[in-house]
Length: 259
Image (cartoon, rainbow, N blue to C red):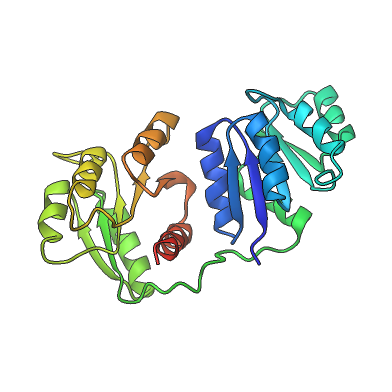
């Protein structure tokens, strides 16, 4: 059974990175963007673990820990605090309030956070959705970086997927007239049409509007991620933060949710 993780974090980019990393290990992740919503989710979801920021709108992390410690229904749920601040007095305070551990964002990447989660919950297997088969699936890669495209194509072909690589939006829209994709991996910075314009064209095309699209880009600002999701992208992956194996895992999980 998948472990349930609640991420209470107002930085959507950081939360998305954590969510993708946790899901790649088979965890079921819920995200809350402010403290009040986060505390409600603790009571509703009853997660196996909470990853908690300190500086939050509505209710800060200290207040959440205090309220949680007084609630018999949730007080024993473990919490790992992940914060920008690392003052000894703050670390001491959250540990006194019952947090299992305290991580400083600038000093810990997603892999180190995952190590802490595993230490708290026990072993988690990478790629919890690996039973999903890509055999025969039409994976479209819209990417003008030929080196990255070749790596992705080879990786998906080892999964027995049918890979279609195009370098721009016009090629994509022409190709889908004869081959319908099962999923599209879409870069943003592309010639002639950028990824957002291509995403609009996909979502406005009745024959493929239900095809899931994963944005795969070097861009990673919060506004980039929000724009992609507002336009209908299923996920937004920052190239530098995901290995080829993790990208394949995200494709498998996305297709599973669409079954």
